[in-house]
Image 1: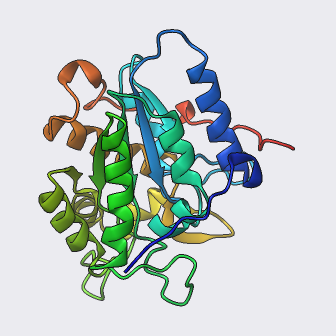
Image 2 (image 1 turned 30 degrees about the horizontal axis):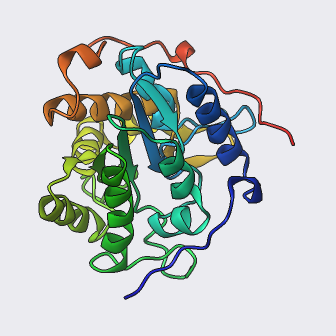
Length: 268
């Protein structure tokens, strides 16, 4: 299957998260000596959240707590995006326009790739999903950066016997296969988060997801959940030798929920 991208500029994309990310990128690019940066391309489970969404928290918001200050995080993850729509909206172009040799590109998609009722987002796990992911991998490598694939974090789902059950069908297996084929580092966040939800149990997991008086959200996290998933990601980055011990911190320390903050939404 031949894939094409719509060429759109960052200015043409009116989403607030993209504007926020682009502003971060411009700020970093203005420095004469830039630190190494870890870019995140992903969906709402990782994305920056704003005050109007609190207490919903993306795990990308908590990842800097586990990384040394010399390693910056540029979180380009956006609510509702799939590996396909992120490309089609020009968001990968924005990332690849900013990324530099020595940087990292962490790629987590599947939650929205699975939505077969929506042709703007749907990808088939063993064909188009892998083809789109290769765009991220090849794009990073062409610029001297290192791609890192992360299987999608699991939703909160349990069967009648209280067992945590997977929800992402063939997508994690497809990503694992692609990582082997392309020699890309893999963070198996799906397997690790599923095991964590199993340990926490049906009731215990409610304290990690965005359960409020008005909402019972089994996909998105609150601060404790985002911190827990970010810890899994940081540990996997170390275990897979993507990062060295000097790059990480606090892997076994408690992180106060008060460290999470939600900025005000950007205005046009």
